[in-house]
Structure formats: C-alpha cells, structure tokens
Length: 635
Image (cartoon, rainbow, N blue to C red; front, side, top):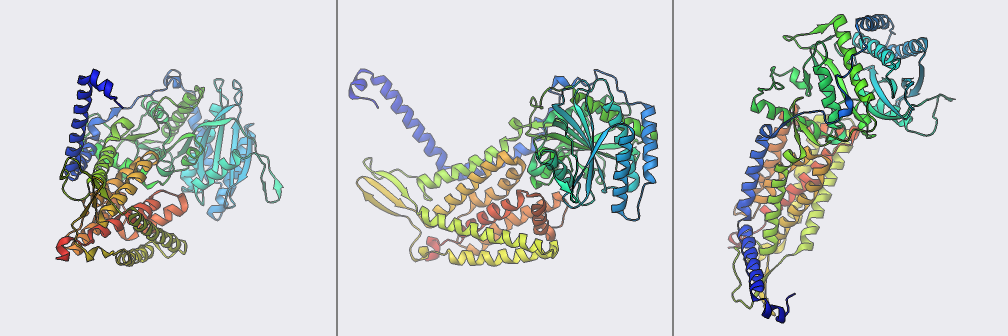
C-alpha cells in the first residue's frame, strides 16, 4: 500500500505500477472476452499436440548403470537347454484325467524335482482352494535382505506349452541359484492359475508379506521367505519350444507401470542375445497386418497408433498379467511371453530353450547387480515401441491445453457473465455479476446422485450374471429415463422472465444478475476441471480420453432456440466417443456397460466411476444448460 508521501517522492514508480495494472486488466479483459474462441483454439491445439507425439518421442536408454548389461558372459549353454528339454519331456507325461488333477500332479512333480536338486520348497493355498509352490535359492554372497522372483503359471496354457515353461524355469532356477555371482536370493514361484493367475499371484504375495502363519486344511504349513522382493519376471511359452517374437507386458492396475529401466534393461539384454527376436508391447499386433513399427524408419501414424493403443491399455485399468500383482506391492515387474507368427523367422527346439534361458539368466544377473530399488528412470511414460517413448514433459501438453480451455470459459462466465463484456456506465460505478451458486450445486448433486444410481444398477445387473448385452440394454434404458426425469425436475422458473440479465446499482456497485444456466455451466466445468486435474496424476491416459470427450459439451453448451436439437447433439457426443472407444478397444458397443461392470468388479478399475460419476452427470448438466429458456423462447 503506497502512502501519499511515498507517491509524492516517487511519482514515476507509482505511475509505472499503475500502468502495469492497467495493462494487466486490459489483457485479462481481452483474453476473457474471447474465452469461447480461445477454448476452441486450445482444443484444436491439443489434437495437434497428440498427433505430434511421434515427433516428440525420444529413444529409450538404460539410465541405471549398475545393470552392467553385456559386461559378463552367460552361463546357460546348450547343455542346460537339453536338460530343460528333458524336464519338459518328463513333465508332458505327468497328467490327470482333468485339468485340475493335471495341475495338482505337476505341482507335486515340481516339489519332488526341487527336493532332488537340494532346494527348499514350500506350498501355500490360493484364494479358491488351489495350491502355489515356491522354492528359494539362497545367495552365498548375499546377506539375505533382497531377492528376485521368477514366476510361472500352471493351468492357463495347454499341457505341452506348460511343460516347456516349467522345464525351462526349473533349469534357469537351478543354474542361477547355484551361480557363484549370486548376491540376492532367487525365488521361483509356480502358481496355480486355473481360476486366475493374477489372483493366485496376489494370494502368494499376501502370504509372503503377512507376518502370521496361515493354516491350510487344519494343519500349519511352513512358509519360508527370502529378503525384500525388488524385481520380478513372469515368463511363459504359450506355443511351446517355438517363438518368433516376444510380447512384453507392463500394465498394472489402473495404468500403473514399473520403472522404465526394467524394460529398457530387458530390451538391451535381448539385443545382445544370440538369436535375438523382435519385441512387441501389444498382443493384438499379431492379428493385424505386420508393420515395422519398431524400426528406425517407422511411419508416423504407425507410431501414433502404437502410442494410442498403449494409452488405451492404461485407460482401461485392466492388469495384463500376473506381473501386475507385484506392482500393487511397489515391486518392479514385467511379463515375458514367447509368441509365434507365420512369415517371420522362428527359433525352435533346443535353440529356443537356449535363447529363452540365456534371456532370463542375463536379466536376473543384471538385477542381481543392483543395490536398491530402481529410481533413476521414470514411472510415468508412454511407449511408442521398444525404442521410442514419451516422458511426462512431452505427453502432458494436450491435457494442460484442455484444462486451460475449461478454466478460461469458467473464469469468463464467473467474472463477466454470459453477456458481452462492457464497461460500467460511469467511472464511479463498478460492475459485479451475481450467480445462484447454491441452486447450481444442488442440481449438480442431483446429477451425481443419478449417475450413482445408474452405476449401482450396472454393477448389480452384472452381479446377477445376466450377460453383457442385457446389462448394457438395462442400463441404457435407465439412463434415458433418468435423463428425461432430471431435465423435468430441474426445470426452473426462468421461463417466466426474459433471459436478459437484470442490473441493480447499490452504493456505486452495479450488480448484474445472471440466469441460472450460467451458474450451472460454471459449476459443471468446475467439477470436470477438478476431477480431471486429479485423475491426470493417477491415470493420465484415462484423464486425457475423458477430457477430450467431455470438454466440447461443457464449453459449447448454451441455451438455443431449438432446445431439443441441442440436447440430442450433446447426447450424441458421448455416444460417438463410446463408439470410437469400442472400435479402438476391439469390442462391440452392445457389450460396453457389461464389460465395464465386469472389469470393475474384478479389478476395481477407475473407468466405471469415471463414466457414471463424471461423464454421465456432466452430460446431464450440459443438457440442462442447453434446455434452459432464452429470451427468444419467452417472446
């Protein structure tokens, strides 16, 4: 606060501050007066920024030097490969009359094989009555404080592929477990995944980190532990001793990923391995036309498609494999699956065993060199292939543009109202806008309650197992009826007076009363802005897709002469977004709500709360704004 004496002594300073304030006010008025147009321009810029993702991508690199990839020679040789093949041949003959009996007999065979080799093994129950088995190789050069995990699944593949996976894992565990260089304990976990490999892995981890001993079948069973699990690898060979490419899975719950270094390390190990095979991050790439997405001369739109598919898998929130259970315990893990495809080079037989074994051994040895958790690289990233990625600094720009566009429109309506921005009639009069915020908040709460009812109906219908199609039909009918009821209930008495704002001058302040729809629009934008800003840090991909779909409805909705047409247009926007999402996700739109409820019931994904807690209430409020009475209607 400048005193009169200070103003008298420093007139130039006061004049400068006054001019700067005037410039700031003029700039603010200039921006807010064009907020609607600026929002549309920012939305277009956000689309351009997404299209430019491939141009912003950087090459992947191993940020953690302690991996020492390629600094040593591998121990897993052709002799070990033949031993793994022999174990697989023996395991093929271990089978029962049913799949459950086959899994149980093979668990018993694994236990006997481990005992014969001198390793300690332990059994633990799953959530559904199955049995997991794990073995521990104690590091002679370690202190037992840290360990690594190699995980394989039984009951999820055909018996031949399962035999190859178990035979290879047994030999790798034996080779690495007896190595002189082993400084961390190694755990091999064979899970009973017949009723869900992710659930079985979660059961084992819960038992591992539980301080109490749990009895099974009335008897107390031993369950020995190693050190703190630092890294984990889930391996499977679904096509047996044959592979032409490796599928690497990173996705955990709700878009959570391991530290990027564990993937770049594995990619580097694969590059220096004999018989190197290409890596893919999307299993659906096998069914589409073959594209050289990962080459240095990859086409722009191929890389963009890969980025969108990577983000889509994160947005769904569905864990892609048993490795995701480790991420729930803040453990860096990835899934490795050997796949085949006609028309490209394939390694088979002993060569395949040798390649798989060397790959797993070198990956475990690289992690064996670490002294702490991975922290150098990033946890927030978008992969455009094994050789390209986007960091948070590159991919955050579109979401920021969308949120800024919403902020500008909300600020303009809050400060200056819905009319033209004009100066006060006199320099002695200040203009202020007045909004009925409490009524707008009540309408938003009613919209949220309607969305909660629709979401509860969706989950309840899915719990009765009536099928995805019937769930979608029932929920859609309810949402249509609820939308009509919401518009009728929230119809205010605004139709009894012209839409022209009223002005009252009191004590030198002109108070301009705004229509109800202005407060509704501001509150709707504020709700979307707050929730999407928070969601950006938890699941960026889901937040970006949701904001792209809902921002136009929030920004462009306003009372029109033909309210019915406006309501239909606003309703069509989310439906069009749902159709696009169904096309990208590869599912039928008639199954949308059924799949949404099924995934939420099993994985507690964010997608269902976003749809019924944000998208649907936001659309209801936008339709409420579009159906509000205008001056032209009254006349």
